Length: 265
Ligand code: PHE
Ligand code: CO
Image 1 (tube, protein in one colour):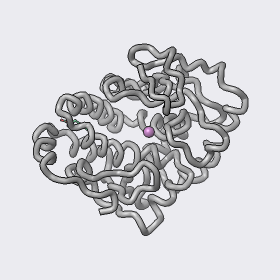
Image 2 (cartoon, protein in one colour):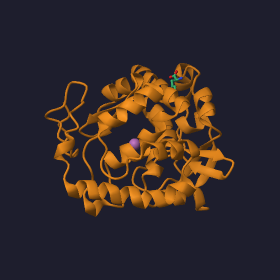
Image 3 (cartoon, rainbow, N blue to C red):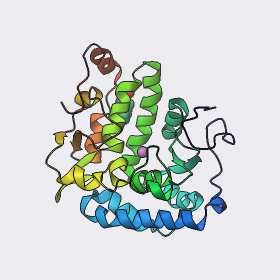
Image 4 (cartoon, protein in one colour):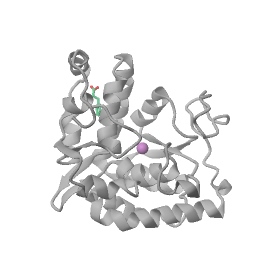
């Protein structure tokens, strides 16, 4: 059980796999209204900056009026890709996290940020998890890739390579960019749920935008407290799937002897 006082969720009622009841009735009208305002603000940006796969899924979800009931979402999600959402109190340890992903369960934080955190929040909340991550679980290739990532996470734990694998998650699932016919677009959840970084990552001339390169990413450190200095651009989810399919065991072994790259290198 997590006893880290820095985490603000209530872990006392969590099951051994860290899941909890969503307890939808406990959300207040203010929570729902804040969720709606977050969706509205973000919706003005996503048409221009989100990748088409995400945009297509979110349009079909029609879930912006209030905090969604996870059970409702799960019916459609199971049909689409065999994934489902499980409610969790917040961040959970690597082992249970990877186990959920490997079994096509995506942990979604139950609580919503406070109004004063409208623009910025340190821990992921239900808005980030739901708006950023859940739509892409409807895309079959992305969905398969994320389950493979979960299995790869369990393996990386055994190989003491979590630091390297976490960089891959960071630069793809959280902050990934994709090339499209209309230019570069975001598919990373940390971008899709961000009021400021979503336009920055596509339009601003400052950050590096490099083509996806597995070993470079595994070696590139990242900052969690500011906009990214570097983004990596995939051609498609098929490319992401293909380029992460090889066994990472020999890659980890080789890269361990090489130093990391700074975030802005
Ligand atoms: N192929 C990786 C391994 O052998 C697992 C993985 C798949 C990691 C997909 C990330 C994404 O460890
Ligand atoms: Co996230």
